Image (cartoon, rainbow, N blue to C red; front, side, top):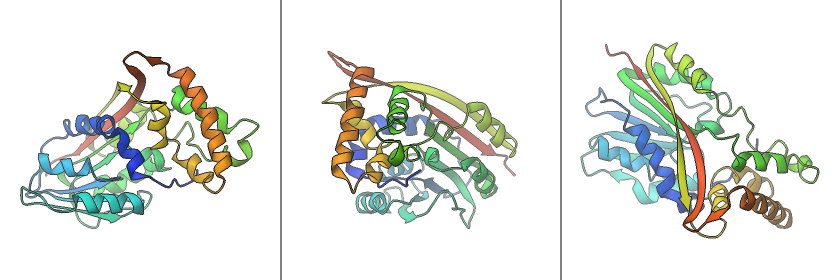
Length: 271
């Protein structure tokens, strides 16, 4: 799979809808043991939701990690520094495939990132091992690879016109695991674990809003792979746009994008 080049401005065009699952995840995270707590946001993106961690834990030492220089630059410019409650918020480069903190953490949280990390189940043992007693690992991932949004992209990319360039670029169906798999993996690491799914009914507005949504996320690998061939890029996007228009018809009040997400909160036993 191509490592996508991220566009913070495009990603933030639907910031309100994208932030809601993070808030829902955060609501299920229990009290943290540290005073002040040490928090890592793994895959922080432009930092807009990372900054909300300081609302819940005003004195926390928070670091957002990402492997996109563009995302980190935007996050640092808009959110880094002391927080109103006496804590700190900073940002640093890291790759979730290899990142392991050198000090105990009270919370490791990840928002819509692990679907981009092959083999992420194998990282859970390392991350839970560095939790302080009573600390929590929490994440949410899109869980809709069977939805038209992704299925049509894969079908088009694997078709006769595009397969030689794009068949191995888009995310595969196994980039997110079943709820039972996540529950079993985390529970076997001696964590009290809660796993659930939610399907949001996002009402989007504007011209081709589903295409606009996916340009900020799932379509990034295709846009990156075809970046040096604007004619091919525009042709693929036009074909995909037409398929999305049929799959997600516009209603008088907007275009509905059903979007299922998977959540997990795993808390280590207190000392």
